[in-house]
Image (cartoon, rainbow, N blue to C red; front, top):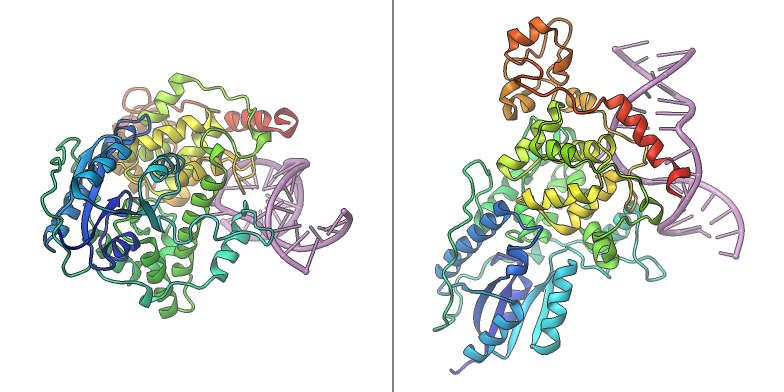
Length: 473
DNA sequence: TTTTGAGTTGTTCGA
DNA sequence: GTCGAACAACTCAAA
């Protein structure tokens, strides 16, 4: 062959636009072989999720189609990445491998092993600003979000000129053998996330051109599509996080008085924050960030955990959210906080149990964001919620699902419960309905819907005692 | 080195 | 119904 060859190793950057690794691989007119390695350590690991794997495989199919439309195609191999890449280097005669940097603990181990023996170059990052680039004056990492975000914003911000479209044509990778993508597991029709770069860009465009302005006011409403629903796409890099930042800044410039775009940008900065935290403090994947919070006397009742997983706690907002998770692979952000608070602070179950369940269910499951969120709720992490902040599932339901549309959607047993009337709307506390009202609504507690697994007021007192500083010192 | 101000997302209670 | 205080103390970041 006449020109040099490079492997483009895709991991969580399944896109052709704004892809630094692809651009670096293409530089100099090289022949580029796009490769994805199906890694059993990830796909069959203890924190894998059939829904997420289905989304990934769909994304790979979409990417392959996008590549073929440009004269290229995706080469899929199965096995340990090191072995697969070493073989491909030999088969193709490639001199270099280009990949976007991934900062999660597994990726760091994997990439370290690969880069010790193979010519791999890491270009770009799954974060907007990679770990190590947002540090305190002394060169150490931030552990509090607000100063982190100030330092993050103080650096030059990306603009429209930093983005580039997918190349119109790509070099033919030549005759390289690859596996066909496995069919199973398929995405359930209930999963409202068609995979692929085009869909990711469409969602970002639609969200940033309107709904983002209402984001600040609607983001907490679980009964409303007030969020971007971009998380699975960002998880697999079907859209560049940098492109999301640019879109948020542009929306902010258009609505200088509005708070929605800035609020959403803040969430993108949180995404970077937790990527940095996990990269700088990889032990948080195994234990609480705060040493003082490592000795909380968890109850860890396996039956209560099973009820939480199944959405059978008797608290409608909790159960609806857990059904939304298992049926659709996704859960509204506010609902994630509510169910997490319930698991940790009402049931006193170790946050790591909930963290693992989320990873096994979430189409957007990401080790950094998931760990950060759980440790925040549990009060064990960086900049965490104070231990006495315990969500009341009834109050949260009334506040963020005022008409009960969300709980009715996911809990058919509650479909007949009135939202208004005598004595008040009780859809978020159906056990307070009279026997006659329960019968009229077709929701008899104990028959159609479970009674509350714990009394929230008592559970709250129990947790305050368990967390009290004199206990956890 | 010391000091000071500040810290995602709540709830409950009593006036 | 609304409002402010209490919940508890600690750690971080920066001057």
